[in-house]
Every structure is written in structure tokens, then in C-alpha cells.
Image 1: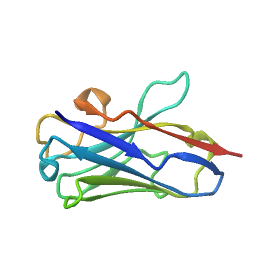
Image 2: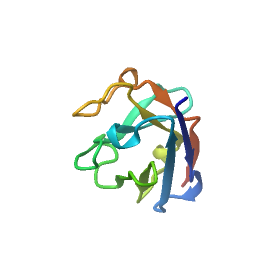
Image 3: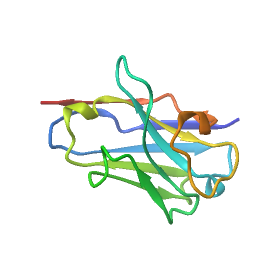
Length: 126
């Protein structure tokens, strides 16, 4: 049974930083690309970024490029999302996700991911 558990969300002022973690179990983590998505109230779930199975490649949405960094520690079965220079528009529930199939290039659409965490709330105050 695959489980993804996010942590690290919270309330932060604009310009601040947070680091989210996603601990994975029940899958061969070192073989799996991982993605981060977010969903704000009344909006659809959107791609934030993704990382390849070995961490060699990362991909970001234009809205977070240069501010957010994804990394992974395969020894700990954990993927991270470091968020700097946070803006009020970054407020959302953040989810990590994993695809069922091994992919060379991680997808950017929610439908390309099969396993999801429960999400962690990030609120950025102005």
C-alpha cells in the first residue's frame, strides 16, 4: 500500500520561506519520479514542480521558478519542496504525488500521477 505523507506547511509572512517534506512508503521510491502540486480554494489543482527518479532533473511551473526548489533523499524515501520568497498567491494546499509507471520525464498534469498525499496547508499573509 503506497502512502505519501506531507508535512511542513504553516502560516508565513510574504517574503518568508518554508520547506515541505513528503515521506513515501510502499513503493520503490528510488525508481519513482515525484511531483508537487497545489490547490487553492475555488481553483483546480496545478503543477508546482517535479523531480526525476534520481534527482538529476527538476521541472518547475513558471510561477515558482527561481523561488522553489525540489530535492530528494532516496535513502530516506523523502522528497522536499523548499519555498522561498513566498507570496500570498502561493497560498494553497500542497500535495506530493507519484506515478504508477516509471517515467523518464515527470508529468505536469495531475492525471499523470496515481498516488497522492493528504496535503499540507500553506498560508502566506501579506
